[in-house]
Image (cartoon, rainbow, N blue to C red; front, side, top):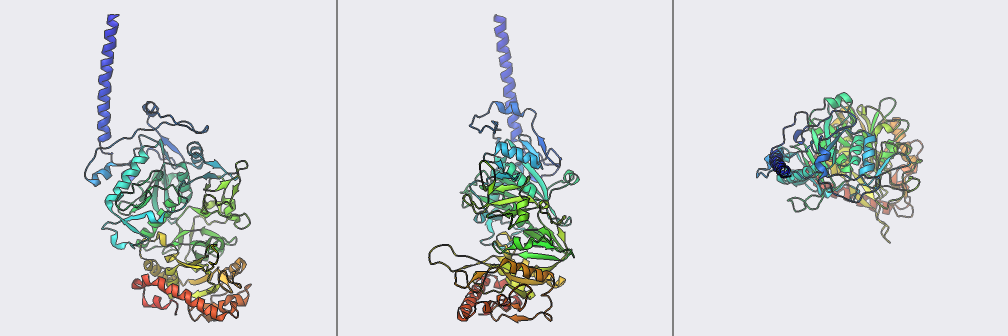
Length: 629
């Protein structure tokens, strides 16, 4: 018995010594800097898989390693209990550059899914993301959490010497110091490194191989992975195998808040872009649209430097190869009017115009779903099926049918789906030089004509202005429309000064002899809320677009135009299938000529006041193209 006790004591002492030695070894390992990547990933480390669909990597001893630290929690029946990896602390170093290069995603401590298939994303979202279900049409229905829209006030651009002079600083692009960005970066990486599983999606932005950029997204939610699988251009197996290092990396740690006390932060949400480090960091918001528009912001900076004009527009192409661009803010009919069954859709939101033509930036569409019906938007309705992501919608618990009229969660209900889900999509999404450029506005004042032809200088002026009008709220006695201006019809995503984009647009219009049209889809015969004012019929707007595509309004020698005295717009006197009196807004107002004159002068004054901030960068010709009050 004594011998056995001595053997036990000796064995225990040996085990204790081995445990102490192992602990010391692990501590040393955790304090060592991250090994430099050898197969892409920049500061993020090396990916372990090159499968084009779904690939998983895990440490062999992962389950035994975590079993002792497993924490018990209440889970739903279809959510298996999970283990949680420990937090691995790095040694503190006073130099932020050293900390940055020492920080990276630890691919050896998590389940890693690279370019996960739609099926894999469905499976994981349903299993690990409470509240996620499948709609009756087969789409994945999920929630973006507290934030159901973008957070423009929390967007930051890093101010550093190599890019500072290029950026249009102000309310749209708020400065963030390099040091503050590194704090956010470290915070995001530390959060992602504590997740049970991560998703990496490697894709492209831009269909033209000459100008496309490689985007890597690292995220913790399967919903986000599927979203970017739809919105980026998916690489082929061979392209993925040779992908190498990304040109830009998005770290989405949106479920973890930013530290609002960090210099430059005003809330627990932060969407920060660092052009020198080629990274975007998301904290404090799980709204997937931040990734989409982050890529667009990146393209708005990189493409003009390559001589390519980035545009917030939709685009389609006719059977003869003629391309049309559509610009317009929310509510102007951009999506509706560009979705033409007789023309091929190049894209619905983001494009570039290069020396060879236009190309779509995205691999999918991100459509609004509020009040969606099959009758009004059959293409979008049909695209909501297996593989699509539905955000923040309400559906019937029993039938799983979506109620698109229900805005109790948000009015910004959305669906993300691959562009090939649109039957008449042009793939690859590349077209020639635009023959027609259409600027859409919803003028609730009722004084702009349903259609007018613009000179190149007028095109620049109205492109920079980006005008539309919002209808006033339902408060008693409040019926005045509110003018809204968004430079280049996409001000929140601009990086350079608006005149830079406008100058490039004017040069391309001149070079390729594109015709530019201003189309009002708003009110006619009076302002919104007036006795005689009414919304211009959609069939009239479609007839105008058809006439433009048919070339019926192109030649001023064959079509009679009258000149508007205030805005200087050339208004056609006749358009097939549109009543003549509708075309001239002053005639449409009838006897209310004094009211019309007062209203048109009011709108002209608003245009002039808005353009004040652009005067210093605009040419005299562009300034003269504005309204005369």
